[in-house]
Image 1 (cartoon, rainbow, N blue to C red):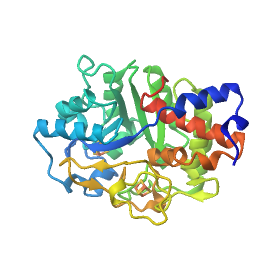
Image 2 (image 1 turned 45 degrees about the vertical axis):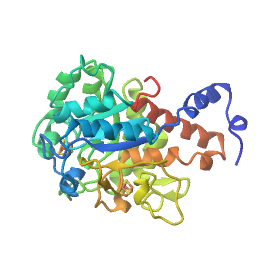
Image 3 (image 1 turned 120 degrees about the vertical axis):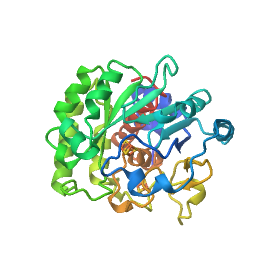
Length: 332
Ligand code: SF4
Ligand code: SF4
């Protein structure tokens, strides 16, 4: 292992210093068990997490809970669901107290007079045709209309095996709408026919994501190293999975030996008491998990392992910067 300053020149050292002081402490919150869609392959419904807890309806309890989370050291609240925009008063309770990110399917526009700089991640599962097949609605057209030109919104593009070779058209439309995009991969939790990954499809997708990043650097928020990790499930000779995953809820984590992990991370259910196993599906087989945030965090918590060469450390910095941009800790 070498020191950071021995590995980096002045420009990279500046980038490293900018992110190394961030000390991001995130947790994830199911804002509601309800959704205005029912997508095939949605991890929330397919794992039964929507029925794991009875939703807390009293706003004052949400407010007290958020204050307690803040006292616990959380400095990034990631709101998911269900569909958070069905409960804007809960979203507002977070937004008024903590740096907040809100995932949404984009069908309901978040009012910018009430949430001027709330970072919004709009889920997208492919082009209009794929969205119809998997989600029952062409949400892409609606969300583009709702968020066109919005500086605090981006598409979280979950790429399916059907999209391989066809993602550029979607990225172009996002660019033309004046928005950014971050890509991750479908885990196919409900075993939808034709949506399983093959090694060849993953290799092709990696090349395609690299090309998109090169062609649309102002639109695609990503890094080549992230593409490598998410498509191979490997980092520095280690394999992603249960033993390595950083995004397991801390109080439920009995792994021995303990891996490098997100400090104090919890994924809370909407009763504000129940905890889910991890940042994604309670029932997913970790061996096939493609969760983008978990892979990103896997890199981020393993800084020491990247202190062997300049290239490794630069890769680590790029992934950290990507995460910091997506959650608005540094500008695009
Ligand atoms: S919009 Fe999101 S929460 Fe709702 S069903 Fe689809 S994937 Fe699940
Ligand atoms: S399903 Fe994915 S995110 Fe959840 S514990 Fe397994 S590897 Fe981690």
